[in-house]
Length: 561
Image (tube, rainbow, N blue to C red; front, side, top):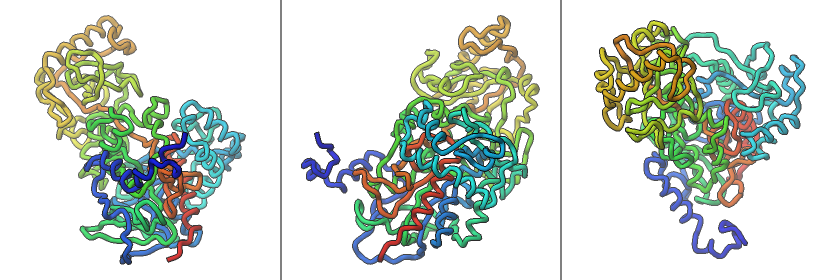
């Protein structure tokens, strides 16, 4: 039976490409489409004025965008990077700096670790999570892994002379990950003090040295193609300070916008449970708006590996995870450490507002849902945090909603917390009161569906305190509850799980070329990083590798005008 999408299927005559995509895009809703207007996404047949021009245009300056720009420039192409943020780096500059490259890197060889691209490929395709990935993409990743490591060294990235470690997600039978280390302070140079600073700043310096033009505070608004669903991609439209620019890409456009986790409507296409209360790791420094995927879809690009965003595997625990810190909006440290107040020196401070409280011992608090009920063993991670419950009288049920960490003055002293800005954000993310009933009444959030019942919170704490007396958590199996919650003042800190990785995105092949809904290459369009789908890998390595591939391949292409 022929496919509906087959060119030989007569049903296609009644469903032209334009109509099909427009109907599909309509299903996303206006909010999902954001500022990307269809009129900006495809080229008119008239001559177009170009405000700027380069051989290769890269959208985004994170772990995929900067390697793409360097690779293209080294191949002799002129390059423009369009970056919507005030600075480079994306999520990567805030990251832990764990780079899982293998196949026989120089560091692996130095420490006697035997590895080859073939062994790496076998490990990755047989690992229980990565078995959902596209084998062509994994093959390219493994074949290019050593070259990517050498590429990073050549462009100023310094890895400590230490034995490689296990990947942060992935098969652990061969040690393949090397971690860059940033030891400086939080500053303009390192907006949150993340190890990723030691990765991204050297790459930025190398790109600028090669003549790459980086346009900051420029937002891509659409892709320009000869026809909406056919022909070459010619460039992009972008806005800057209220002005619209047409930027020509003579050889290719590389989409490396970082994924879609910040776009609630878009991410819920993959999993309806990812509702608005779940904040995004990496914000507010960088957002994953979905603009790259949506712009490419509007000219016919396909999504790929969508099951990876939904299937509850170990890798997916990087999509939905217990917050790293409590008491701030984004559930992620916004400063340089447990006692580091250098957020005052960070350009992010005005929008992050709170560093967050790092929890040393989960014996010091309990987690309750919006109805004041416990729902989880506080030491648990991963999928145990799903479904804190929407039903007021149920212990656990379907649905999300806010999660609050409840603790008392004794717990704060044991943790050595400073319960004031910049460590906590009192504007809807942290509350205190002299009684539990008063505390429940103070909890006000746009994500809290209604007032927390004071009696319910009192009952929850009393029951938990009885478990401390018994030395056994009869509800959720928390190991030997140790501390009662009984000494005022009492506190409630935002402790709702975070969304982290994008493991689905645009369909690409092993050359990082974007593929359309009909299985054909979109000429002149490339994609790398978390905007791309098909490889269910957490972390920096795939972004760095396919960014380098995309830049190289785009530079090879010469369009005739």
